[in-house]
Image (tube, rainbow, N blue to C red; front, side):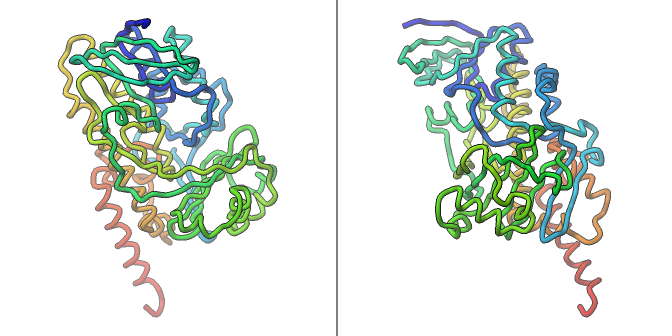
Length: 416
């Protein structure tokens, strides 16, 4: 069996794997990427957050992404029963990027992977990892291509950025269910010919359809718009028929989408995504580190996926370089803890969204501008800023604020 040797094997060519491969390659180490699928391929996670721009910049991807002409994104808008809560990233609490992109992920991910290849990193598509054996921090990985050809790759370290593939967790039985409730998404790309009816194409819109059910609306620069309904399985079961029949009925049932997307042409037949939340006990081991969605994918509501993927890979890549240089690395302190910090903050906001806590905050009658700036920073992805009370005390701070708003509005309501 053929054998290759590299310093670092990266599993997965998505944003997580590409960021890690680029940063490690720029440090002078040999890197190979293996990817199970053929690119370009479809994946959700189309609305980025400003915080991921730091990681994309360090990886050297900004120019290549800019050339693709993706839709620039300057904020996020939330809508419920005609009420609007609009966040503009320029008004956030945390210094940093004030814009990002809304992207067709097939094109975006291929752009990153192509840039990595131009840096001299081999990317082998349609190549499946079938076995990994560790000998201390060194490893031997067996891979197989679509023609059945097998080979082994010896590496000093492995970065698993395989996303939903979760290669190492599945091979070594590390997977465990997320604490988040299982939900289902039905979505499609649409020819958005009535986009002029919308307020802003330069932001994602999240519409509260009913308690626990919401709609994403993500306009692209091409005139196509991504639309998806997310909710518990019981909501989806209310609509009979094919995916397309269900989707059109859902669009018709929501006043915000009814006219704009009536009889709209779909770029592809509406698709289903479900049971996406998963996690693992440990994000690293002797000779490997897990990055991106391999650690934990939460929920599409706050577009956290690509940010957690790229930032965790940015952090992991720097630690891998230290390890290869013979330095001591405290993976728990320098990787696990900050990664969980980001995951935990986003998780609190996801849970607060579905519980209705954020409804109370977002659609309050007299929002505090300072608090809105602090929450805006979280929505921009700056979930590691401990100067922000809505990061530092994320779970309790949201609950306290919602209770205060409810009490204040009750006291100010005539007849109460």
